[in-house]
Length: 260
Image 1 (tube, rainbow, N blue to C red):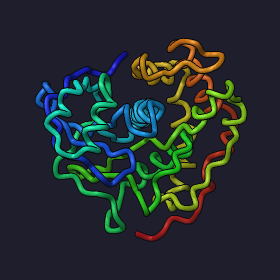
Image 2 (spheres, rainbow, N blue to C red; image 1 turned 90 degrees about the horizontal axis):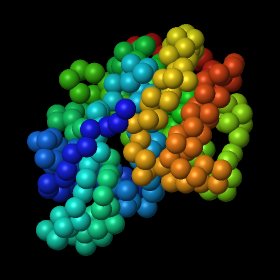
Image 3 (cartoon, rainbow, N blue to C red; image 1 turned 90 degrees about the vertical axis):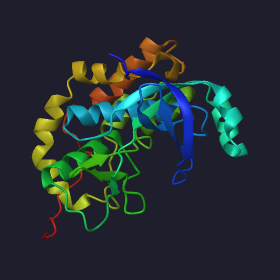
Image 4 (cartoon, rainbow, N blue to C red; image 1 turned 45 degrees about the vertical axis):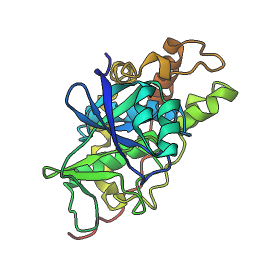
């Protein structure tokens, strides 16, 4: 499997909500995308996390915007007046991540009443992938056409940041607790617990391998003990398989759901 590849034809505007300075771009397939740039300070592993977790979301029936690989010609930077944007575009020549722009979508807030089972699935997904970035400060969810969509998965899969120093231990990640205390959907923990067996059963080694296969080879940087893209992919599958197997002690404890 692989993500569709399209070519950027115009940089439209930056999105300054995040530190990585993503931007809106138009592509030669007539699509409009939020571009996550390979040249941003957080590096390629953020793009890997975005692709992997979005793929997991689809397996778990969590709506999330479609993704493409964006081929960026740095010549586009010549037409940008903002020097910061110019530097970012020049540093991002080649393949970047495009996330389908959802026109007319609204950010999640306290007035939104999500489907309880969907809210539980999102919380379960975040606990599984150790996503630390879905609090009220930054909910990272959009309401589009009446359905809640989870977005911005780059703060997940923190374990891969340790790989340049060694292979790490999947068994350690398997039991790493997840703190849902500030999670925007923490009141749906009981739903996550109730759906646990079904959701875990979907994430077979074959399903995990298919999700990881969507990541472009060039984003999978060699690390000690994993000298090529195939070996790095196996390492992701090993860590995720370990996390979903066994008793899953990371599952958020059920709390009383608030009346709605």
